[in-house]
Image (cartoon, rainbow, N blue to C red; front, side, top):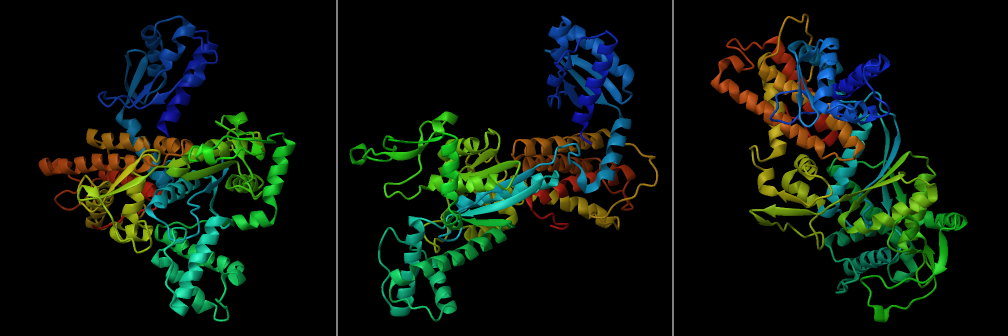
Length: 576
């Protein structure tokens, strides 16, 4: 039950009826009517801009037109307790207690499906996220994007969409050769006691030794005398072991991808050639010269004829090279092939979750997908910005046993999966995030995860003291009860939940969910604390009995917290 959508349709229906009677002009501006939450300082439940929208067309000032509309709404809607005009052109509505009672009972019937947009057109989504090079364990830089992609998938699935989660394995190119050689040299170190070279092109982390040991143990017949003789064997083995490590990192975060697509397979199947040929047919590829990239010294840069993609036709700042000097394909060319592979699987929407260092890549890849599909909206890219780890008010450096970075394994060991997921989602992904270890471990309002979980645990304790289970359905045999003003204030917050979910899924912004849950929990804790001063506001009476309206209210709050935390994939403990 989305009261904002319901009342938008009601208001449009009332205006349409009045238009048919000749009392109003509505034209084609009805689509501009909004119903939203009023400002916090106003004691109303809904606010609509209908008077402002219709003012010009009806040649009346908004306040004059509002009087006419208010009269119509009062006559036709018995749920309205109070309705008033506010400058510059808003009509504010306050509902009566009967409305909130019916609202609560409707929510109770919806149980854990509350917030699903039943009228939403269902679509198929492919979300590609993480896609870190398979050269070692995941680090904190990957963590935020991983959680963003996984939560987006959960959110879209909750709304009824079909979602596939995918990891693109970049197992082709120079970095894989360096990685394979690093593993080989660790094998030599283990078997022949040869010192590992101090070479900046190699991977130095201890995890390379772990991979080397596993390859030795599982491949007794392999001869490690010469790298060139076994590089075609050792490369895939090293990648397989690295992927096992990555998958375990993801599993510890609660993440399971549906697909792992390897770049080598695309190359072997000539899918890069096919995508280039398709773009040639569409006249988006030509042979030309490009200037030196920003990071190159222009004196050392030699302009040469290259195969170029016309990304400037789609808003990019320059055309992009598809082949290197040795005529092998660029990373971008392989990425075009991968995205054509995605397109050919007939998903409605493609979503890429990119790290902060890939933000500059968005224009060229969206240009490529638009060129392949003639659809500007086929691909959506979301950037996951940097995470700064803080402890004791200063940058926090954990164990670097895995190499030169802080791993996901380190982070989860320090604070756990739930805190990692909740805090990583607690701000919009397009701004940097401070992950403060001290606050994450606090049992206070400053720790949003604790505050939300404590809200659920408090509700569970009330149910437990009444010999009930918070996760079981409750039956209301009659409707002889009424909500207090304090109850209604909580119900008003609950009424915003479908709007929160719709906005989160439409804008692909799941950070709105933990923000909402924190606000709901804060309101609940404030209500709970009122009972310390006023016994009449306590949820349990002196006989540990709970009133019917309080039971309903608590169940509704617990349901919404359960739904939200399930989407985030964070636990809701009954005891804390």
